Image (cartoon, rainbow, N blue to C red):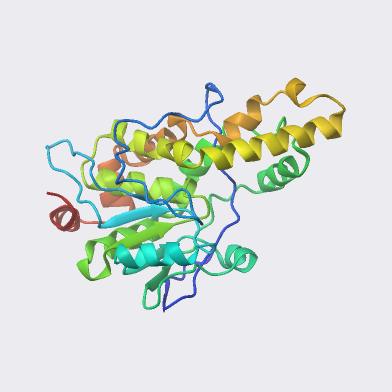
Length: 304
């Protein structure tokens, strides 16, 4: 994996192609979670070309402060933005877009479509080095048969990102801490693995309780509900066609677990940080190399 961190200007960036959402420890009911209390109407930014674009502001920290609205946003890929979407980003005064997508992903989907003058920062990271499992998932998505996809693949991705993407997450925190870069958006392909881990690290650095961080992670089920249901129906029909059964007879347990997020998935990122460093705070300090002074500066910039 390349560790080069590059910076561009105007409209040229990164795109999609990664393992899609969901899969974890103990399968939960196969239905996208309802919007939790933290999902105020202003959190979600309705776009034609990306359903999972949202503000990470508004969350209360353990010491009673609140993350500022309109400073940092999280999202999935942005190549299919409509004219009105681009106008919305202009209205939000987005200054910087940080993409976690690899060159291969960008080649497959094309660059982000953004307003002129937006600064683009590339922090390309793999969603965990899954080796042979990548082929297993690719085959499952081709045939609709998810029986060979491990139940712990999504938690494993989050764990691997905590270990393997430290340089990039440190760079992201420093980008966010500089007021000249904000308002800022960071994104991967679906806004799930790389972006979900990044958001968990950022909100942890700001002192937001983990229960709230988990709720924020699960909002992707809500905002991507239509997309998830459509994809599951496609795969169910495909598997039924390939095996000669009716769609209703298809066992969707592994399929649902792969696409519908569970809190245990993002909890795995915290588990890995605690196992390696003792706490998420220590991971940020010792694993990412973010000093206590930098954390305090980040909080002074983003908390009210």
